[in-house]
Image (cartoon, rainbow, N blue to C red):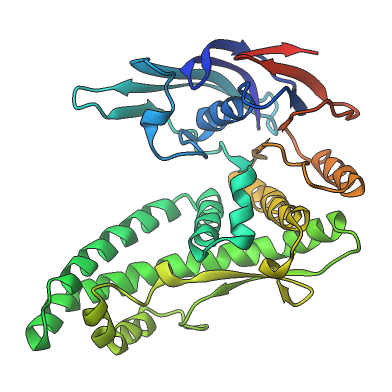
Length: 357
């Protein structure tokens, strides 16, 4: 898919912007703090209705604005003639001071974003890796997000019961229905995560092998205390075994909220790599490996939003990344310095404005 045009009003550092990007590789150049990342965020929000930077809508409107809006044209380019959809999204401040996000869903529209925070997938806490695989699974399976939200709701309710101090048969009776729900929804979540990891692995091996020098072997595995179990009964039994410890600590100690994603390079935990450039390459390869599975799931290619993706990479690796991007559909790549790239449309971003080079 492609973005044909975008109109931005009162969004972050942009008062107004009307821009027609190129159909393939768009190189956004300019000094730091001039609006390059904000523009990527606007493009992503136009496509998906969500920000890849924050869940707090109050951070997005321009300072002092009472509303913010995006409009644009999304083109499903693999159809002849191409399917075109005009999309409008608004953020409006309501009476209680919160912000309302409104706009239509486009079932085939997908965006994959990469930024500095993605290094946490490699070297951060397990929560960063769970967020990564849940985001990927949501792009593959439209119902995954609803399952994740439901699981978190059930988990919060069960934790409140554990913190209430119920003991003995009375406590077991109160927990029982929540155990059953968390087992059913939790195993559905684990099942989709496992499928997402399997879909990622083949393409990740190819992408990382093409980008790394010397060629390395990468492997991702879903890690859960349930092993290979796939039935809700396995999670239910694990909850029963952990009940004493859970009552003492007042929290649920077993389930997909405790799982992790193992990332290994030539059999070594990727977190052991000392170079930020190496860790950045692994994180970038994970994002690029999403492209093919997401394209197959959605029926059209996602747009790529790459924020300073080439920094800290060796020149040879940069060349390989650019070669890989040449096979993608529409790409937006930011850089603080001029970067000669054959076939790229170059735009200067400065002070909330975007101009062709």
